[in-house]
Each structure stands twice: as structure tokens, then as C-alpha cells.
Amino acid sequence: MIDLILEPLQYSFMTRALLVSLVAAVTCALLSVWLVQIGWSLMGDAVSHAVLPGVVIAYLIGWPFAIGAFVFGVGAVALIGGIQATTRIKADAAIGVVFTALFALGVVLISRTPSGVDLSHILFGNVLGTSAADLVQVLIIGAVTAAVLLLKRRDLTLFAFDPSHAHALGLSVRWLRALLLGLLALTVVTALQAVGIILVVAMLITPGATVVLLSRRFDRMLLLAVLITAVSAAVGVYASYHLDVATGGSIVLAQAAAFLLAFLFGPRGGMLVRLRGRRRARAATAPPSGAGPLPAGGASARLDGVAP
Amino acid sequence: MSAVVVADLTVHYGEVLALSAVDLRLEEGRVIGLLGTNGAGKSTLFNSVMGLVAPTRGRVEVLGGASSDARRRGLVAFVPQSERIDTDFPVSVRDVVAMGRYGRLGITRRLRAADRDAVESAIARVGLAELADRQIGELSGGQRKRAFVARGIAQDARLLLLDEPFAGVDVTSQALITQLLHELRDEGRTVLISTHDLAGVPALCDEVVLLHHRVVFHGDPASAMAPERLAHAFVGPDAPDAAHAPPAASAHPLDRSGEPA
Image 1: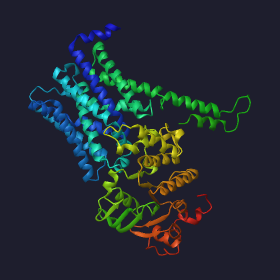
Image 2: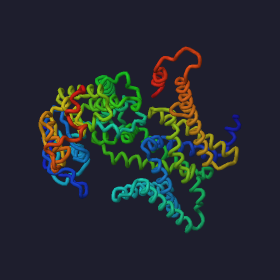
Image 3: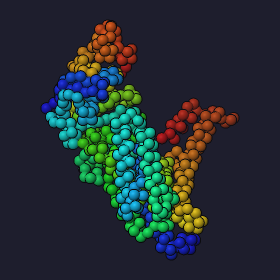
Image 4: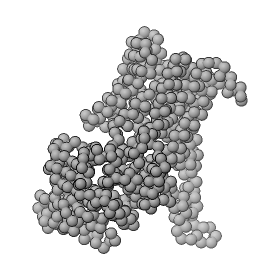
């Protein structure tokens, strides 16, 4: 057992892969709790796809890919906001038009790029090929993003819950929105290396959706999201090593498995709780067979007791 | 000092006229009901006080200054309509009330001992001490409304704006909230309520503003409730029988006379 855990770590590419995956997963997990509560999942999808041309251009001019990705992530958000503000097009359509257009631009750019850029690495991640420089980049961006998220968590939660109150207190709702979207762009950058553009969105949504089934306290949800995704990331990386399967896919599958467990057994609306509640309700309403009479209203009284 | 001064306020949304040359002076220490049909401009007037809409013409003064100044000083509290609250959101009553203190806290909004005391006493004051740890979806409509009023109390706001405070609220809670708002008024605070539901208005409000894109009436509740005045605001001045026809049956004050306020 110990060997299974230690053996891969003798390769420096595996330790780097594990570190990058953990940092990316934890940063995504934190942000994901807010995204899911606000209902911005599609926005996460959009930003993650829209960074593709930025990554390609950064490669072509020899800049760190994080800069290109960030510029295009923020640009996509600005374009979506601009379309919504100036037309009657609804949010989902504006998001769909912008991110597919930018993604397509990235695909076209790659097709005109002489070798070098491997589309599949960008799309599906290349965590085993993480260089020392990539690792430093991801560590710094991940640490900054996580620190800002945690320091501003109360304001971000206020913005997510009741922007009208934020406005009433004289806080800038626009600035809080921009902050969260900027952090989204940075988070996408950290996760690109680990799981690639296509699967980043899973890291941005699954943890936040999982903890909804586990808790009704925001702080506890943040903690659980971090713990669950850190374990999932480690499980994913090890599974990919021992089973010789794609690392990014394996991390996302581990997260999906965690979601499935929460869905089945979670205390907040998991299937098991629902079934038990239904069975109890049925038992309470069923006519007693031969036994003493059930007090009138017993069923509803008992249901009131378990209802949230 | 007046709580709210509105001068010649005109607001358009594109081609649509929402408010036309509204002049209004609301004094401090009053409970004021803003009444009108949906689309009469109540939300626009609220949003103007909150500094959320740019007027075509005219100006709004809140507690002696610009709306933005009053808000930055933490003087304005807003209690949203029930349907605009995400009841699944993972915050407790205490979390919500604590948000009232954010304006006076540092960048991480970490509560100090004095802030925590203010939060607890605000929760106790609205009678939710035993439910302070409940997630807000686990409350009744009236309890939830009280939690948001407690947020305004923790904020120590001078002007409280409540949007449809009695929608989805049972009669007992309505009486509790009415009493609470009267206490806040007696402390010198101003309470501005926007509603299209006339029930509870006579018991709650010291004065009433009837709005129909402009101020139709501003004065004491009893005069406002006169059928011809209500007809003017609720059916519109152009309706053929405006002076005689009562407004929509449920909105008629007499229909509510049998109910406890």
C-alpha cells in the first residue's frame, strides 16, 4: 500500500503532476462554491473555452501561457457583458456565441501554427509534461487566487446572496462582480495545465455541486469542497499512474465519483435520505394492521418534525 | 433634516415614462407607505432613492446628501421582496444579520466583539434568538422578513426601505413586523414601504404616498384610503368611472376591515 503511494513519487514528473493537480483542484474547488451558488456554471464553461486563442498566441510570441489565457478570459467576460448590456440577447445565448467564437479562433490559430503547439495537450491537459517553470507559474497564481478568494470571501458571499444589500452599503457591485470574474479567469489558468480546457469546467462545477448535498453552511461547504477535491485529485493522479490512463480524465472521474457518493448518501437531499423520508412518510400514513389506532394527525406531526 | 427629498424627478426607460416630475419630501421618524399598482413607478422611485437608476431630469436627496453618500455612511438599509431571496443559499440567520455590519468593517469583514454583540442584540430584538443558526430557507416567510429587518437594525440604518414586506407573511408575523417598525420609527428612523397590497397599511403607516407615474396623493392614511383617491391611483385617472368605481375588490380597504391588523 505504502509502495503504491511512494513509488510514483520517485519520478520528479510525478511529484510535479501531483502538486499541480492539487493546487489547481483546490483553487477551482473554492471558486466553484460561489459559481454554483450564483448560477454561473455556464460562465465557467465559457471562460475556460475562451482562453484557447490566448494560450496559442502566448506560445507563438514566447510569453507565459498564463498571460495569454488571462487576457482572453477577461476579454470573453467583457464581450459577454457588452452584448448583454447593448442588446436584448439573453445571457446564455450571449455566452454561447462568445465562447464558441473564441474557441474556434483558437482552433484556427493552431491549424496555422507550424508544429510545436499540441492541440490535444491544450484541450486535455498535459500534467505529466509539467515543467519546473509551469509548476512555479501554477503555484504562484493558485496561491494568489486562493488567498484573494479567502480574504474577500464574505464580500463575495454577500454579492452572491444579495447584491442589493451590497449596493445599499455603498459597496460597488460592479467591482465585486469583476473581482469574481477575474478570479475565475485566473483559476482557469491554473487548471489548464492539470486537466486541459475541456475538463476545466468539471473542476469549476462538480465540487460546488457536490457540497450542496453535504452542508448548508457556506464556510463548511468551502472546507468540504477543498478536502474532497484534494483527495479526488490525488486519487486521480495515482489511478492514472497505476492504471496507465489519462491523468486529466482520471482526476475529473474521481471528482464525479465523489459527487455520486454525495448524491447517494449526502445528508442534504441525497437519495438515501429522500428514500428513507418517503418510506417513513408511507409507514406513518399506512393504516395500522390490527394494532392499536394511530392518533389522528400523527403522520403530519411526525413529518413536521423531520422537514427542514 | 428630511429623510428623502425628491425634486422634479423624471425617469424614462427608453420610450417608457416611469416617473413624471415627482416632487416629494419625506420627513424623518415616520413610517411611509408608497402605494400604487404594478408598473406605477414604485420600484423606480425606490431605485432612485437607492441610486440605481439615472434620472432623465430632477434629483434625489437622501438624509441631506447624495444617495451614494448616505449609502457609504451606512444610513440606508434595504429589505428585498421575498421572491428575490434565494432561500436555498447556504447562509444562516446570523450570517444574514452580520452582513448589516460589513460597511463598518475592514477589507476581510471580520467581525469584532462589538459587532458580534450588535448582531446578537438585533437578532434578539426581532425575536429570532432561538433560530439564529437556522439556514434562512428553514424559516417561515415572516421570520425570514424579520431576519432582514434585523440586518437593518444591526446596520443601525436611519432609512429602511422595504419592498412588499407583507407578501407571503402570515397575519401574526405581520402584526409583529408592524410593531417592530413602529419601534424603529420611535427611535427616529424612517421606514419607507413599497406595496400594492392595501391590507395592513392603515395600521402600519403614518403617511401614505399614492403613486401613478406622479404623486396622486400624499397625506394621512385615512384620507388616502378614500375610495375615489384609491381609484385615481389604482384604476388610473382616465378610467371612465374613476370617481365611483372601487378598485379591484381585494384591494378595497373595506374588505379587510374584519381582519385583525
